[in-house]
Image (cartoon, rainbow, N blue to C red; front, side, top):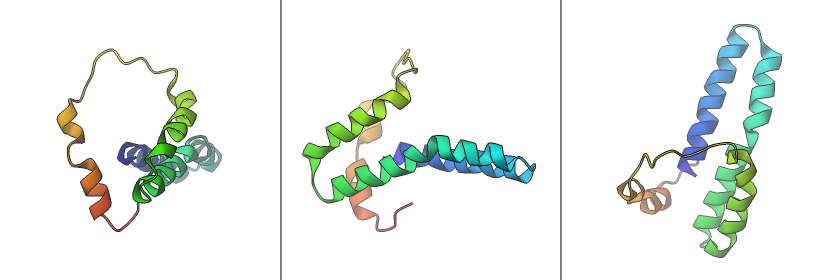
Length: 96
């Protein structure tokens, strides 16, 4: 969820750069193509906060087509990276 929000933020920064150069159509197209990241992050956060863990796998399955072209050659983060992520989410009160 945090990574999806990071993607959304990066897309917004890129779109803003295109707009600053006068390419507003390209900026809007970029935003539209990646709007799913923010929507998915919001849905996952809602389910986690509602303790509806059984509903999360179906959301994750819907995300698979967006990542099917990516090949993971090696694991870049170890399990320690996830430690405390749920606690940080539940502790946060503002949604990005």
